[in-house]
Image 1: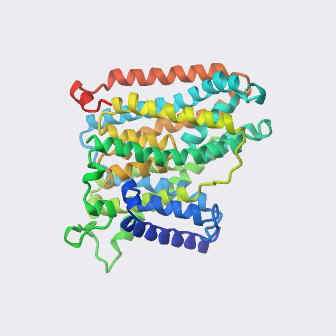
Image 2: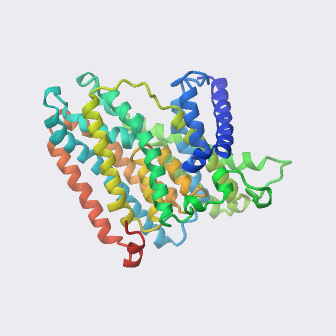
Image 3: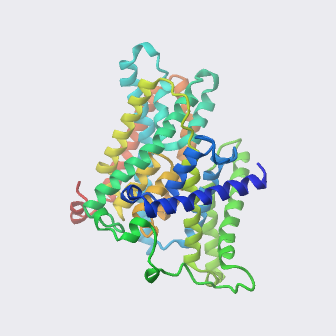
Length: 449
């Protein structure tokens, strides 16, 4: 990849973002769906890019940008975080960890159980591999990267694994978007969203995305003179520098650990916390503006969503169409049930916003979770990403262990045992969380489905 390819990829995506903004302002259907310009741009990139009609000449690195931009988004969090009291933050992070960790473990467990117990019975002539159920979590929850990792473990033992995983990941993106919009309309119409009114009551400027001149607000105040450095470069430079160093650290850890993959965005978040603590200790933080950090983060989020959607591969060969459709349908039912019966009743702060983010993450990817969240919380006031950023540190290590070890156990003939253990552990975590973080009766009544 050359510097000019990076330049043109970014330029074409920015053009699509402008077109997406114009379409949102003009097309009533897009306004009714409340799609952000970044999502529209991603869809245009999918249709017009190399995975579609090939009109927009994106480079072969199109799919790589999401991983980079996720690191930037999480590196910005500590610079924009307003977690409040320490005790409340710990409680919210703990609830976030338990809810997300349990669904991660359950996804792998129940996916295997459903495949081993139901799909193999319904399709006895197809010789369904024991690891077929892994495709649910690998595609819906892990995305194309995890699907590729699982397929790599299987290698020649199961050559169809990559096609199945990639197809599941592509379907998951669509489920994340369409299902997310339906859930948002459902929740907002019942007055359960904190920052989004009913769709029918939204001001015209929120529908179109264009703000009237009389109601426009400043995006920040510059703490530096433009004679020295531009304030946008000044703030974005800090976040990009943290992201770059985090990548080097993650690569070093991976090599030192014998090739074990370490998420760059998790390292970026931890490194950013350290930088913020140093800035506060030295009182350097007074030379920065939180709003400008927020704008940097939001810009990265827009690009993240746009590139993430545009990089989908719609022409993946679908193997085992019947079993795969049944498995993915079961996955949608499972995560919808988890959303209503578990997530909304366990999160202690902004349960709807956090549950919608969970929906997006565990049907699509983190990028889709952010896309869904930004519709109901465009200013990120719910602190959902702040809590998730901290909670993901232990979740990430569990993810790594599962992806590395689980296929090996299944190949070795331990599929049933592993599935039962994972399901039991997932249930135990969420049961303990519900007992520990149960909301008050009044709160529970407010969120009752």
